[in-house]
Length: 441
Image 1 (cartoon, rainbow, N blue to C red):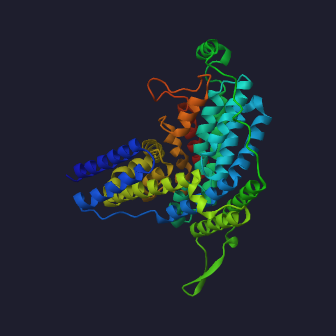
Image 2: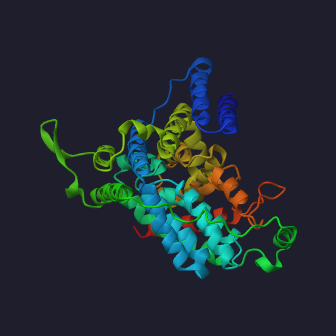
Image 3: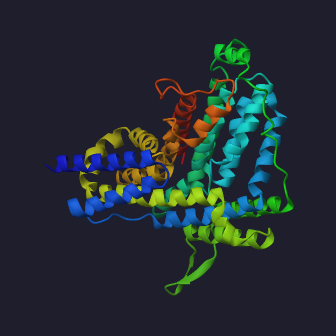
């Protein structure tokens, strides 16, 4: 009877997540809250914990990022990326995803890819490189970068979960960053041989013959960079560097009085303080109106992430807390014998929820409860790149629409899309390399 009840509850959780995905955006969080209400009213289960710390970090980071975007800082970062991509046109399959990865790591969001996308297409097409190769790699690399960024929402969730175990943000990044870079390089080698060359591609030739294909547009040209834009980007990056350094060197963390003794400020709180300070400095030194920050796309998307994280993580935590003994007991031996099951779960939940933060908050606590080491969990964490398993992400759809050659596509079976191979390679290589690094710690 207990197993039947757990099954019903689990199906309810999955069903509400599916409904939220259908309605998109913060609907995932809203229907997550419906799930919490159902647990309370129907099953008499107390609400689980709310990821308050992660939500506050996300709020502070997107406030700073929104201020930077308003001041023109994103345009400055994009201009730097564009110069790098144009400098090595023949190596676009390698340069594009690595550049996208680097800038998304710094900004804490995969949305920077949208600005780089036209440049990648233009450079690859002009050099007769099949656009699918660098575009699919770069779009997916922007999502992989989230687990390597010290200021991303998913990292905020991971830091909050790992901190009680004494595993710091720098410990996490020391595994995810090298593993992710290796995964991108391996995927680029593989994708360099994917598909026919443009002159042999029948779809491209048909579009060319019909006049449907137009010359590469000039959209990829960088926007004019202002002094305020450059200044805001440098202020933001200085904040990121300080956070990383504070994670590496504990002596950089301020000491405060707590219960009659000096203790270091909690790193999660230091991130919040630093990012709000960054936003204040950008407001004061870059001539923007603080009230306009809420109108920036980065702030808007970030707050959607907060609501989505709030609801779905709350529902997942409620379900896991209520059934922890049975879930842990059932998965314990299996995970101990094959810890890769946690990676598979991260991949699957990320694909279902289309949220790396939600997958992190849903699955990592199970790994912790099973007694897996923090290093092992950090190694498997990049599997949340599974958000690209299904072609439902805005950047995937936009990429397909942008590629006028028709090389980047979504197949008739839906799952057979251009981004599938990068997703699978990134997952396998990054998790494999991460586990190797974790074993050395």
